[in-house]
Structure formats: structure tokens, C-alpha cells
Length: 305
Image (tube, rainbow, N blue to C red; front, side, top):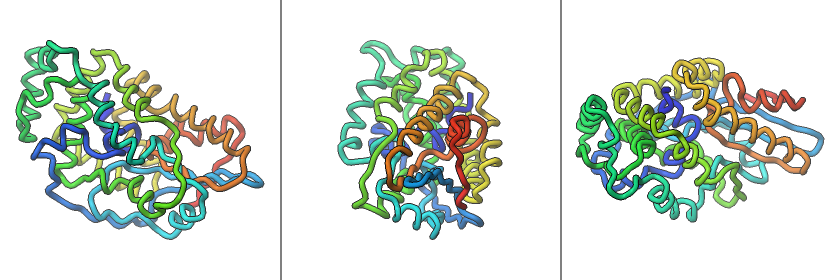
């Protein structure tokens, strides 16, 4: 299903809030490389407006190499001129503080069950090989449900190769305007629930796809980030769609949420003011994007840059 390719561009609660709790205790999770990229045009920015309301739509990447250059005057003008910044989930100290508690409550298997016991001999072999590549003991994720282990295996190799949740776009934006009011489109519980509600078979498929693709994780995300930095939403969508071959996953992860966010934007246009919305770039690219759902409501979006 290639779901892991979308984690830095769509639903990635760990990438938004920081490393998964288990990574804080895993020495191998320290980034060992840094990459600086300079955008040619810069990431895309859209605008929805009526006579008394302006809403900016900015697609983000939740993890980036440290020192990646993308923040330009057009983005700064839109952000600084907005009354409020809206992200996917609340990114405040309270949410970060409860992230570990929520993750443990939702992401652990019942006592007496282990992750490896859910896998076939062939799956166990591939899973153990992936953990060995990362320098993680085979039993390290045994208490986790497959989705939580899959999320962890999706983020960990990126962190080891220079990607940093603390360099993620949302964190940078919020640091630029620390006093500006904040809001969110979803809750942390909702985003974790997207994964927790997947059938166990789908969770295991996600886990194994992450395990088998350890070596592909960074090159794939590098491609996505390159298109994002160029502001090429169509090319970004093409890279994303190479792996999004499960309609149910696409519906849950992208399309249903995009439709809900379009409803939110439609309602927000009834109130005056200026809003800066920063969400994963995967939601603003390709078919059934937020812009497409807005267009279906007769609401036009204009490309600002």
C-alpha cells in the first residue's frame, strides 16, 4: 500500500509532535547526516478569499533535513499577516505531554500477545532483518500493535539519515510566530485512530511494507521533498500516487479528511479575518485534494506562489 511514503506529507502524528516515544529510548535514532536544499521557486501556497476573509493553504512536510531552506518572503508575508495559524493537530505542550500516554493506550497489544507472534515465519525473518539494519533488538517492538511498529519503522530510518521532526515545516512556522493564536483541524486521538482502526491484516501489511522498504525510505522522501521545494504540486502528486494503490487507505488517509477540511474552510469563510492553514502537502496535491473539494462547492482557490 506504500502508506509509509505519505507519512511525511499526510497523516504523521509522530512527525508533527516529535519522535515516537520508543525512539527516545533507542540510541540508533540519532540523525547522522544533514542536507541543505535551496528551493528554486519554493513550496506552493494557495489562497481562498471572499470580501472579508482570506484563508491561505500551505502544504507542509512534517520531517525535513536540518537546515533545509524553504521559508521565503511570500510565505512570511502570508503567515505574519494572518490572525491565526491552523495545523492538522494541536501542537502545544499539552498535546505533546499526552502523546506518549495516548500512544501507549492505543498502540499496545493486549498482555500475553507479542507483535512477532502475529507474523508468519517469513514475515518474522524480514522484520528481524529490518530491525538489525537499524541496530534495534528484534524484541524491541514486541508490545506494539503492527500499526505502531510500522509507524516507528517508517520514521526511524529517516531520522538516522538526517531527517528531523524538529525541522518539520509546522514546527518552523510556529516558531516564527510564537505569540500568534493557534488552532487545529483534528485531534491527536483522531490521527492515531486512523491507524488503530485499520484491520489487523492491513496493519501487518503496512508493517511489512515498512520493514521491506527500509532502504527505499529516504530516496523516496528525497524525491517528494525535491518536488515540494520546487512548488510542483502535479509532480508531487505523481510521486505520491506511485504507491497509493489501496482505495480504502486513500479514502481514510486523504480523501475523507480533505472533504472534511473543505467543509471547515467553507464554514470559516462566513467569519471575517485572515487564516493560515498548514497541512501535509499530500492533501493539497493530486485528485480529490482539498482544492478539488472546495471547487465542488463553488469555492475557487488561487495559487499565490
